[in-house]
Length: 395
Ligand code: SF4
Image 1 (cartoon, rainbow, N blue to C red):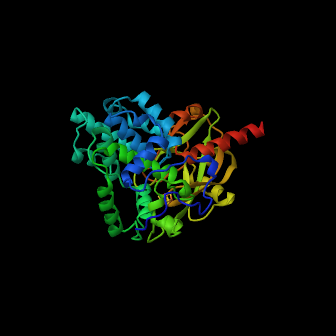
Image 2: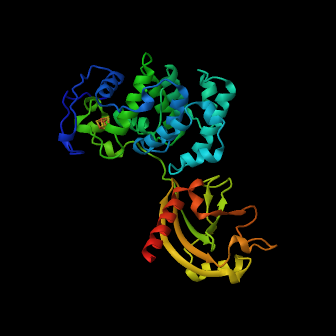
Image 3: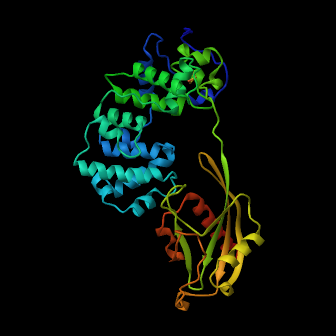
């Protein structure tokens, strides 16, 4: 590794210099010491940093697995207020947990959190045992290391995408980080660099360093406490590191939702099953297709699916091509409003007419005014907002 001057020269204007603090850590200090010194000055003050309660740390780590701090903070506070202990969360209904999680996405985290709380409640206390923590639903190596170090002060080094990026850049590691050998290399290095006397401090420091300083794009290299020893900075290869061997393919999905409305303000909701996105959340009747459907195709579907075709009053497109990005999926959604000339009191022996959702996909009629009681995916919330804004315009 090359050693550079104490004051790293400004090579590229990654960020406005005036907005940054200056660090002059000596290059003789170790990697971990310099990170910890940086953290003392620039680390974020977050509520889960001021506790050693393993349940609260577990909760924060679940929220932050796929959510930014700014967005996750309000959810953390809300969930802690409602479920201050693992026992209180363990005894909640899953629907309430999903409802509190609504808008955060990646709902499997909420289900895992709920199941983890039940295991902890069964154990009677949160054991300071890595094997127990690692075996909790939804807990991987990273989350287990965070809990063990933050809550119990045990020497486990965190290693996630942020940490891998810092290590790959600083030490000039070109092994692809999405390969087993690349990960093993970085895992060994992370374990070696861990400050075993202060594992919580070190882990928090490197996590914040990746979020604030050594960011994926536009890292603050020219004001970095590690720039004098950073391989990537010296070699002008910051943008090239870390290396990934492959790009994950993104799949397009076309979703056409039908918002039904009866004369007395009922709409049809369906709870999603397992094996796909949004397990356990609610949605409107859905037609999924390989391409965007025309209005004529949707109309034909309605006619073939309604038990009583003559109750259809109006079919109107209210939202078109609303995009929603998931990790490996790009969703394109349309929303149609289907008004029906019937009310609950019209129910006959055959029951209310309904849209056929397919085998095992029964829907339920619910009051439109009570939709907020159901956990909907963020995409469905966006579609509802469109529906409401269209209704306002038509008034
Ligand atoms: S100099 Fe740049 S690339 Fe190197 S550790 Fe600092 S911020 Fe990251």
